[in-house]
Length: 396
Image 1 (tube, helix red, strand yellow):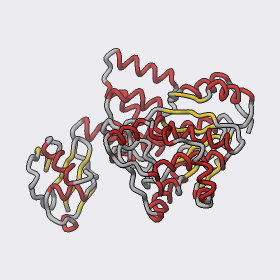
Image 2 (cartoon, one colour; image 1 turned 60 degrees about the vertical axis):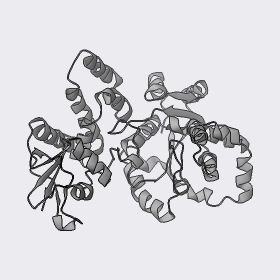
Image 3 (cartoon, one colour; image 1 turned 90 degrees about the vertical axis):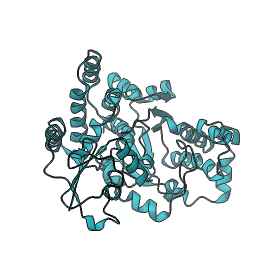
Image 4 (tube, rainbow, N blue to C red; image 1 turned 90 degrees about the horizontal axis):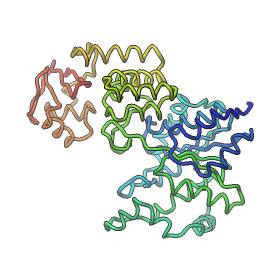
């Protein structure tokens, strides 16, 4: 494939959804030279689902692919067991090999919703990390100081607060960095929480006599609750979510995130996005623009027809206050007790019983159209349980 060196496309590549480039001048020069670069992205399978927060870098990977560069997608089946705590306030527990293998089963298929997986190099990093011996790991570790690791914001905060930091956590940047050595990456993509790990790739490549990779660092995407999108917090919008669910969750994000979502999670032209931003500043109803956003994201993963149907469902159900004809059904006999809290947890409308109590106390639950404030309310066959404005469950 011929390399596209169009200056405008290169500028868009280096600026849209990008917070920092290391080294900007060097990378721009290589992109304009027509050389085919190797672009690396790794994702750990800590959950069975890839969410649209992860899709931000996958879309950037596709941008490079569309310019003719060789993209490299690594599923971190080895690093996923170890666990990266770059964005965590406490130590991430190690996963079992079985958990990681189950999680990663559909990762390449999910990534194929965004990138051309047939033209992509695909790896699992256990292929090389599982073969390293103690001597090699010590050689790699000698390239970094403890001070460099403990200076990271989240690690420093934990140490200052007396929270345990394991030696295992110090090894993770070495593993991610060595991935870059193995695939001979010219560029690595990642979020700002990956800063230290991305730089580790440059350090180890120099140690192994390779040219250090350039780095494209993007912003983190907030989830449905306004915090960083994370499977650990359950605030994700998954690539495999049903169209109606995906549409509804996008409609639930804060109005302040509309333009950010357009920029990071779609490839709508920036001129059009700027127009939406001006309309919002001029007082246009954010809901109207958010519907366009939700339609575009659902279209990206499910196609135009499903996006149209999801929009129609949302408008008829939530704008006109209609109860949907089709909804999740839960058999009361599957519950340990026929009470509202058990149903909310079993139907996955909430993650835990504590969440259920909080939602009920906040007035977010209705039974048969009437607000329910009773955390001990009994349910019966035929009841329709509503959480918020979007989620319904019928009791069988």
